[in-house]
Image: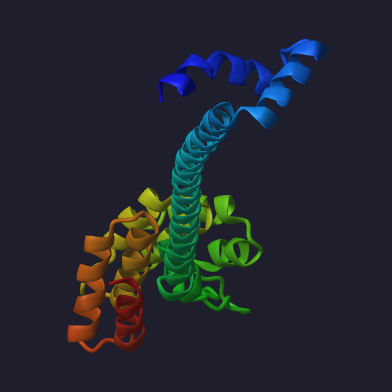
Length: 237
């Protein structure tokens, strides 16, 4: 072992190629004739090989650990990415589903009112004796709502209030329309229709509670608007 230690520097220089040409010749000649020197050199080589193998294996193991860690990190990132993609897709599907449900299964208040608002042809105009509503009805049928409104506003009757409600609605003044319909008396032949239209005006202005109250009354009283009131309640509740 002492001889091995004694020659380590010499062995290292030879292996590293740091000897002069003559030194190399001398070194290799000694290996040929000096058995102890050769054995020491062989030991040196064996130890060097063992050390290099050990560190190479250790380094390889560390690289494998790093590779595994990187693979796991990549897998984790890919898994997170997939999860994000899944949740994003799920959220998009849910939003679409809600939209479809709202859009096609639960019509908006405006859509319901447009769908169920009764067409009002107006009163028939007499050809002979002129009636008090004739001028107002002629203007109404021509779409001259302002003129018809002006005439009807000077007439005090449930008929006038009913048609004023229809005209105000046509002009987009829902508040005035509701006021006119509410003036129609309970004893009037226009009462049930005025109430039904009032319910639609309330629905149009998002007064859902008031609208439902009137529609339910139409159903309970079995009016001519009971069936259609029930349909609206099913769609809006």
